[in-house]
Image 1 (cartoon, rainbow, N blue to C red):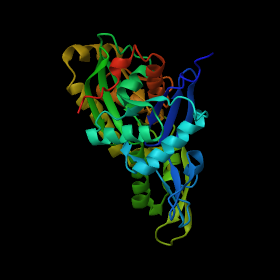
Image 2 (tube, one colour):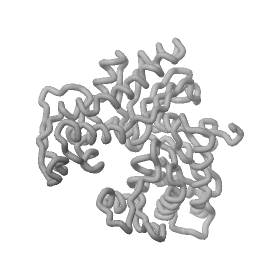
Image 3 (cartoon, rainbow, N blue to C red):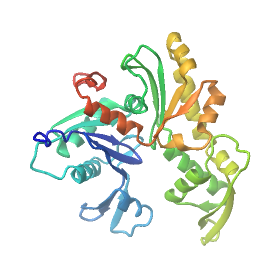
Image 4 (cartoon, helix red, strand yellow):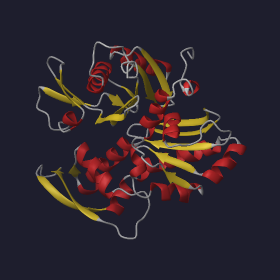
Length: 341
């Protein structure tokens, strides 16, 4: 294949929790946590991705492990750019060839300034051209919805930093809502609850594990229990508590309600024709929190709509953005164009 080096265009799902890189013709080649470990005094990068995530909450003074993206947007520009460059180099070995075109996913509620920061990070990391696609659009394409048809497609993409709800028709977003309540807030809610109810301090990683193993959005017939370790706030010593999934459900009740409300609000703003379509076809759940047990049940219960979980919710956004890279000319219209200032 003579022109193999031009085909290295990529799509990046730059997420608060995980970053995925899709390479044209190859699929998703990289899926790592969006975490960077820095040497605090020199600012040089020590580790990125999985290796850096293991360091979260466990670092000595001279190392800081940070998550450069907060609420779906860039909080630490330099770290984001270094992380992006690192990830791109991992899949784009041949440095001296053509620079890749990049498609980067951003939350739909992002400001122009935040959007420019994302583009700038892409160029700094070595892209020839940076295109931007809104996450719910990418998620819908990745979940296999017929976004170009004249029917209403509803996507609920609950990631780490943002929840994106959008109704899509004719290749564009008709109504959308982006709220900054998502997976991270569920973790924080677990931490706050354990503090209040059991006076136990937890780290973020432990809270995330509890959410994944015990978290539910809807009552189960059998509520599992688990032992949780943390630091007792009274004695200051390590202690173990037994917690059931119903208790975790109470803990995450508030952020979950926000997510459900976002879906309701979006339905409320949807034109009636499209609302009728959604009634038939239902809404599709993507993003990491789509894996939370009973979330589909909960939404079905609260909205009366059919709810489907996407086949591969963690990869939907990356696959959708990847499809734009594969069929660049055909899907050019869904990308956000330059002149929208």
